[in-house]
Amino acid sequence: MTAIILDEPGGPEVLHTDKVPTPSPKPGEVLIRVEASGVNRPDIMQRKGYYPPPPGASPLLGLEIAGTVVAHGSPLSGTEFPAIGSKICALTNGGGYADYCAVPASQCLPWPDHYDAVKAAAIPETFFTVWSNLFTTADLKKGETVLIHGGAGGIGTAAIQIAKAMGAIPLTTVSDPEKGELCEKLGAIAINYKTDDFVEKVMEHTGGKGVDVILDIIGGPYFSRNLKALAMDGRLVIIAFQGGAKVEEFSLTPLMTKRLHVTATALRPRSKEYKATVAEALKTHIWPLLDSGALEPIVHTTFPLAEAAEAHRLMESSNHSGKIILTH
Ligand SMILES: NC(=O)c1ccc[n+]([C@@H]2O[C@H](COP(=O)([O-])OP(=O)(O)OC[C@H]3O[C@@H](n4cnc5c(N)ncnc54)[C@H](OP(=O)(O)O)[C@@H]3O)[C@@H](O)[C@H]2O)c1
Image (cartoon, rainbow, N blue to C red; front, side, top):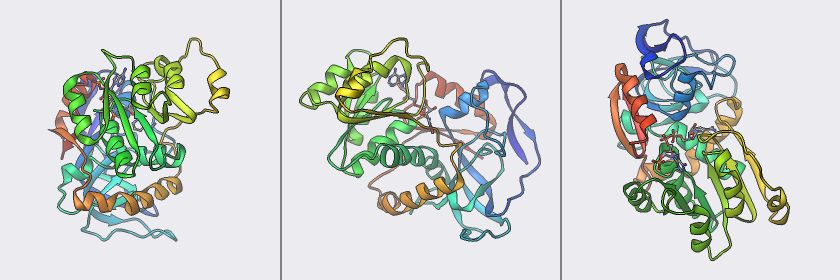
């Protein structure tokens, strides 16, 4: 099959097409003929050599796909296979930038009503990550406030919509007014982090209380300010360190005085069983909203699979809002 290969870590130019063996589905897995795959920041990290695939996972890039089921692996008790020929989208463990990808059946979900491959491929990585972090890790509740950093990105646009749909009040940071407008349309209060201090703005919008939850992708440079922006019993969930992993100096005092919880998580190395519980939760709470059109992934643009390097360049420029998708 054709796949995007990288011979060594580096810039987008290391990505090229090549022929590789088609994967065989293991017990409990299905083989998907991929019609579209999503580009995610973790792919950029993997390409640069900073995010190696977990043991046993495909070394190829690509954490989410949409396509057609073409084969089943051997049965595994408790696992239901989607029918051969059905259209599914899936959270992969790697290997999405290819003609075929083998994924655990428990990480597959049907295309929402009236979706095509591009829109379906725009869902899994961000929706699984957001659900897992906001509702399992941070226990975000109806009526609570949540600050989502990077609101115009793939994760951000999904997080705003999901938080809002579940009855929470999203605030978000963006770099320019156009991205702010998009986030406000999706239901968030947008804060321009280039022109405003996000802590001051959070306090203004929450009557001085702070937010209950923060979903952070920046890490070190935002750490102390995130603690300041949290309310009593606030929860900070860090899912990336785009600004760096080191915190030079910070005070533990707000952790005690505000009883804060701080954690950091990555979805990819989590167990198949954990990912299956997230898939079930999405099916129950989010799929009906996707089917009805109340929620919709935001697709910025598409590139043919062979132009994966261009797609990476666009993501690294941050001149996109929402998802970048590869068509196969
Ligand atoms: N832990 C996990 O399991 C997991 C899973 C998936 C993704 N992630 C992480 O989540 C992050 C987002 O991924 P993605 O695929 O959605 O990428 P993306 O579409 O490129 O979004 C990243 C966003 O960050 C914003 N940003 C950059 N600097 C910022 C700053 N100082 N303050 C606020 N926002 C800033 C960018 O927009 P502006 O123009 O507004 O700056 C951009 O919209 C990545 O870091 C990725 O590694 C983690």
